[in-house]
Every structure is written in C-alpha cells, then in structure tokens.
Amino acid sequence: MKLKFSEEVKEIFTKLKRAKFQAYIVGGCVRDLLLGRETKDWDFTTDALPSQIVKLFPDSFYDNKFGTVGVKIKNGRQETNVFEITTFRSESGYSDHRHPDKIVWGKTLEEDLQRRDFTINAMASDGTKIIDLYDGQKDLKNKIIKAVGDPDLRFKEDSLRMMRAVRFATYLKYLIDVKTFSAIKENSFLLAKISHERIRDELLKIIESDYPADGIILLRNAGLINIILPELEKCFGVEQKSPERHHIYDVGTHSIMALKHCPSRNPIVRFATLLHDIGKPVTAGKTPEGVITFYNHEIIGASIVRNIADRLHFSKKDRDLLVKLVRYHQFTVDERQTDTALRRFLRNVGKENLEDMLALRTGDRLGGGARETSWRLELYKKRLVEVQKQPFTVADLKVSGHAVMKIYGIGPGPLVGAVLKMLFDDVVKGILKNEKEVLLKRINDLKKESKITS
Ligand code: ATP
Ligand code: MG
Image: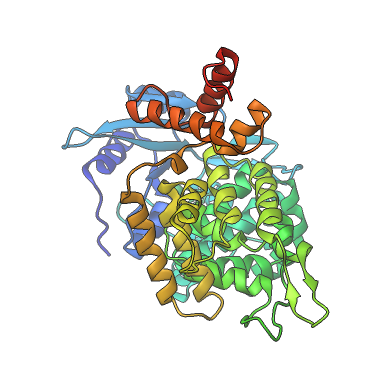
C-alpha cells in the first residue's frame, strides 16, 4: 500500500530521521489514513526528547503538561499548520481513574502503542509501512472498537475511554467488541470521576455525529446515560399515550426519536431537541377522564435544562439557547392567533433563533410519528415572515403598558398610552434604544420629571 503525505508531514519525517531519531505518525491519523478519511491532526511520536525536538524545529513550543512539542510549519499556500510531536510515553498508575500519576518517557514505540485506547487507534507508520501490534487493521475491516489489552483495566485507568468507545462506535458506525462492552457496563459508575467538561466535550461530539440517536441509545445501554444525564434516564417508561393524545412512544424514546429527526447540524440545537420534554416526568398527571397531562412541562423543563447546562459547564451563550428552545418549544400554531401573539413569540424566542426553534419542532413532530409539517405550521411560518415585514409599532416595544402602570402606580387609562407613545417616538427617532432596561429607566425619569401626568 502506498501512503500519501503532505509536504509538511514529509518534512517532519525527514528532519527527525536525518538527526538519527525514530519518527512515526501515530493514533487517529493512521486510522483515518487507512480509512481514506481526511484527518484533523497529524500526531508524531519519536524517541527524541522534547529539548531535542525543539532544537530541530526552531518554530516550536513545548507544552510541559503533556510532554508534547507543537511545531509550526508553513505550507506552499502560506498557511501555518501546527503538528504535535510527542516523545514515546509509557504511563503508569492511574489512581484517580483520570490521569496517569506520572508521565514516563518510553524507550520504544511498542511501549507507546500499548498505552493507547483502542486497537484502531494504536497503529503507527514510519512513512512506508504500518506498525500494527494489536490487529487494528483487522478491527477496522470488521468495524470493531476493541480496547488495547484488558478492557477492564483500561477503563479503570481512564474512565473517559468508555465515552470515547461510544463516540468512535457512533461516528464510524462500528460495533463495540463484546468484552469491551461488558467492561464498560461494569465500570460505568466510574465515569462519575471524570470532569464535567470532558464529559460534555465527548457528549457533544457524539451528538454532532451523523448518528446521534444511535449514540445516545448506546450510552444508555452501556449504563452511562444514568451518570451523564440522569434526568433523561428518568424519561424512559413515562407513558404519554391516552385516549385524547396522539403519542406512540414513552417520553424517553420520543426524545431520542426527536433527536434522530432534528434537521439542524448545530449540536446545541440537537441537544435541546433531545431534552425538550425533560420536564415531563416531574409534571406527569392524569385527569379524572384518564387523560395524561404534563402541565407546564416546558417551564419546569427549562429550569432542569439550565441546571444540566450549568453542571456540564456550557458557555452562557449555549446555555441561553438551550433554555430558550426548551422553554418555548410548546408554541401553538393556531391560525386564529393575532399578529401581536406572533410578535410576542418572535420576541421570546429571538428572531435569530427562529430557524433553530423550527428545527426542534420538526424533530418533535417526526419523532412522535407525525408528518414533517402541516398546513397550519406552514401557514404559521409564512405569517412569521410577514409579521417581521410589518412596520414597527408600539406593540414591538420591549416594555408594555403593565410596566408603565407599575412605575406610575396607576391603573389602565390614557396616561399609559401617552407614555408608550412617547417612548415609541423616541425609539423610532433613534434617541432611545428598544431595550427593556433603557425603556424602564426612561419611564422612571418621565415620572420624576412629571413630564406626563394625569
Ligand atoms: P479524532 O479524529 O476524533 O481526533 P483521535 O483518535 O485522533 O480521534 P484524539 O483524542 O485526538 O483522538 O487522540 C489521539 C490519539 O491519542 C488516539 O488515537 C489514541 O491513540 C490516543 N488517545 C487519546 N486519548 C486517549 C485515552 N484517553 N487513552 C488512551 N489513548 C488515548
Ligand atoms: Mg485527533
């Protein structure tokens, strides 16, 4: 087999070998190369020590924590790429189930391959041949994720590997080897030792893949969902079928099916789709007629999702989008709704999030056995576009008459309208920003200045 490398990769091989060091590309890039997939990062391993690598590559920097040297190389198109070169490592002692107690430089490639997670990730190449000590090529061919060595020990060493196994199985559409899978089930509780940030990153990679629903099912079968998202585990077995309701699945299954059908590629929108009914288990009730109800589940759901996002350390921006999508996912598309109601919906969701909100709805519909859309939903979408074209009116102000009444301490009357009209004129002229805080301050000032009184 002829292996093809870019000029930059060849340059690194040549420089290391000329200085009489061993040089291999290793790990994910070898796997991707054999699969004919584009690789994100080329990782090198060598017997040269970091100080020796830095000497060979003047434009490089040494990251002490991982013993990795980042080498910057310009390509023909004047772009600079960073390549990672790591000295052979052999690790020992993982008493916290997360990190090796100390990083030890290895003497041989064999030691370095032995510490890697899965057989398909434990291959190296010196530029001409593949070094494959654990039958990685065979497992690639058979589409199997299999731990290097004793799976039980390997997951006890670093429990995040259990999620990595699910991630690779999901995005490559592979099966996890039986022994490896049993070891995950037995050690699933150890995932609780792993930091929430690392768990979040793996989870998002699974959700981002082409088969996110399969990934969540696999996480669940492995006993890992219970650790990552116990709130989701509680949705399974929560029935929603009743005489008046069209529902073919329990809440958990519906959640996974909604994710499967969500047309967005944005992992945050997909995650919101998975969690949109997370408030149902705690709000489940029954009417005297035997109809199952979930009153206010979107409100409770939004607060549960906020907790999940905080626990998993999502950014504020991602958290706000998750919460908003879950909070407003129950929007009705009744053709009798007024334009004002549509505008309120747009204000609540945010125009910039409308497409994401509709993607969640599509997932919700298809994941519940309904058709992708309905004439009502299509009409609603058209009206949302129309409403946005209409001129700005008092109703579009970020404060309502209620705010005026509260600040002035009065009931409804002409004064309320007069204050709103004044705010509206100033916003149209660009004197005031249409922002709640700004407008509230202005109302307070107006009252103090007694500009408008009854
Ligand atoms: P991706 O294409 O998603 O980047 P990858 O296999 O390159 O996949 P990385 O996280 O970039 O994954 O890691 C690079 C290599 O380092 C892996 O292929 C594997 O050999 C090794 N590795 C990474 N994480 C672990 C781990 N937790 N335990 C053992 N080996 C690991
Ligand atoms: Mg990688």
